[in-house]
Image (cartoon, rainbow, N blue to C red; front, top):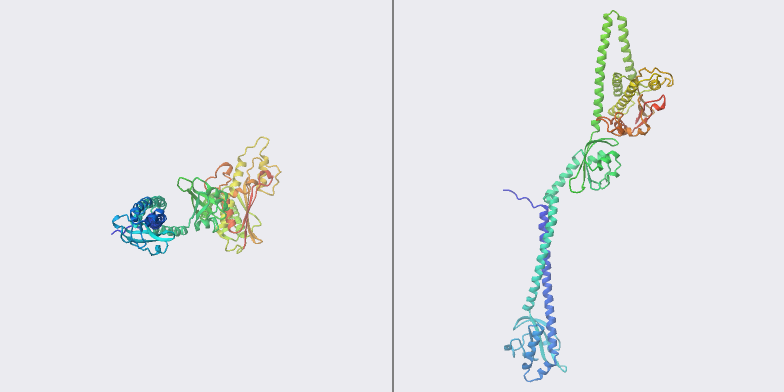
Length: 578
């Protein structure tokens, strides 16, 4: 047996409102009926009083009472008064209650049915009494002749006549009541039809259950969910969005522009068009943002979803480093094979001494770099990163140098400083420096020289950048090839860790010193040249994020060829060792 589905919330409200309107209208109708009946009886009493007192005060009545046969004069007079005043009867009687007049002439001479005592005492009074014509509202008043009571007059209206008048009013009242019920029902139906559309025909239990599910899902979802109204104010935010954006608890109701979010992210949230899988940066996170406007005839708002890609981007950077290590190992394996063939060939040619010198020279060079890095940097992750980057730089024709004052003793770095952040910071800085240095070196190598040696000045400057001790004004060979250089400083001293990377590239313009840390900026495709290539423009942004997460700062010393002997740029990250 199928259990009937409960009536929807709109249906329940409609039924309740119709019943309520019907009860109110019925109550008003009953109240109006009773009020009208009371008013009708009061009006009948006033009408009868007026008729009786008028008859009692008439001189003709007093004169007829003095006659021997009062009925002959009073009966026609009483009937004219009855018809003219719309009362049911006008009865004139003597002081003993014997009728002289009556609407039914057969009743003349009979005793009046009702009380006459108060009237005999000179007082006009009214009562409801059942007489020969039925129950009536009647008034009895004395007739005076020079102060003496000589007769009595009674005028009245039957209750049935009063009821007939009330019934006519009641019909009109019922018509008004039915019209009120119809209008009330129609208005209620219109309101509830709109409510039914908004609640999708669900009943109160379903709405309550849906709200509970909504609240549970809202707080259980780890992704950030943000809903904006048509005025671009926060209408709803879940725990994930508050955590990802760093929003305070009283966010709901505030405008997006008041939240202090980065300008690019604020622009994406305020945009009218949808955004799909856009990468945006906050102070500590990399977020993937999707926006979708709420469908409807007018601008109702926007639904925003946020996903945290900070760890994914960090893992992607580590993967790039591992890929670089693999490429370096492949290159070293290739170079080792070439050197081994060279040594074998020298031995086969009978030149063993030269073979030994060639092999030991290569081993000493590699071992010297390894010894230098290991001796200066006791942190194994940083040491491995520097050795791998050195091999990678060598493969690309870049000289990677560790500054002489570099020193990180074992146990100096606190446990709360993640090795992943160190790899993110130093790895991205070295990669950017190698790119800048290689680009500048390639430009200088392929720059043509005129017959007078026009390329001599840039070449001398590049040589001074690669070898700081050289004189920038000294003459240089225009055809010389100048190797790109990247200098790394890793030093832990005075309560802070310094990771600095300098290059011999084109440098950073002072106007771009802050913009380079924004997402999308890249030396390969700066903002002025259009959007950066996919995968670029995040390195320096991730560096600043990692530094901020650990309470550090990032500084850039912009420089360029216009500075004479000093070119390239220096990026310095300072992290507190606390």
